[in-house]
Image (cartoon, rainbow, N blue to C red; front, side, top):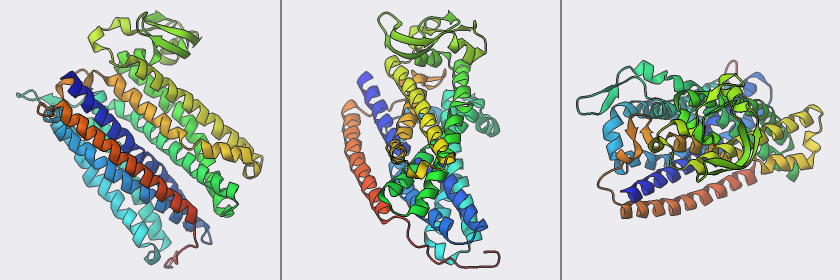
Length: 449
């Protein structure tokens, strides 16, 4: 049973991690598409119209791959996690259905307007379609995160006679106190991803000496937005998310901070390696009393360590949890530094000629993806050994009729398929970038544009 559980968990981790590479870009780009359409509506000429058109194609490509890779996740609730679906389907089915019916169809319908109705629509209609696209993309994220927030902090539920749970209050479910900081932190991270990708594409064109006017707009927009979003990613959204963990899931907080023993005036470990045999951090570089200060705003506050909780409730991959959290924090700091430096050079009117900094922006494009992946690993590894925190253990949720050979076979199949899909996505993106922004298609002029 243990090996089946590990294969099921690994399969869901692989498929969800690969899938989320695409929605985080589309949710970030949705904001930029709305911005470009707004500028296009308020300005003369076709400069911002062409910027919106170019990035709509990249959005559509990422959206399509997100759909293809997201479908298997829905099926895995029934194939690999049938016991969990029986237990919590009355709750998670509500939010997942709302994501599909309200958000996904809103997003996909207006994306079709932008792709196939561009030459027939006025700029006002295109702006409205972009606004609806943005609403659909962010509503989709909200409903999915509402599902995860309930698994992290279950609220508004009622236990039925058969032991299953159902929704007590849909309003309370959608206003879960865990959800606010999780949503704001996640969507800020999506904006950071979109910002770095946009700045990287602009930097690529500037270095190649192509599409210079468009490239400057991409770099300027990506850098300014990315600098602001990178700061917000750390504070308040990241800071408050961490404080929320220590309030509702103190075991997770102790594990990702590497705090094995409860302490007053607890330190923050910047660098070090967790030693599970001695329950210490090897070679630590610490900031004294910083953890107590950041969590409780008191230098001498007591922070519970892992020793304050039963061993069977500890996360089962503490070292991986610790490193994923610190990778997220380290990369988040690096993102702030890169964008801060770029903003400074932009303010001095030197950014577009600074080849070394343009290369830095270009090479930093993958880092938000790594940071976001590490962040989700922190959230999900830290929730273990629970599927629904404090209510339903992960080991109880797997499908009883799916054996280890089945899980391993499909896991290997997904790895092969996703490798092919990843290569195809890269080739298609390269082709879009090679073509670059073209002349704007004719836009039907109506009164008021």
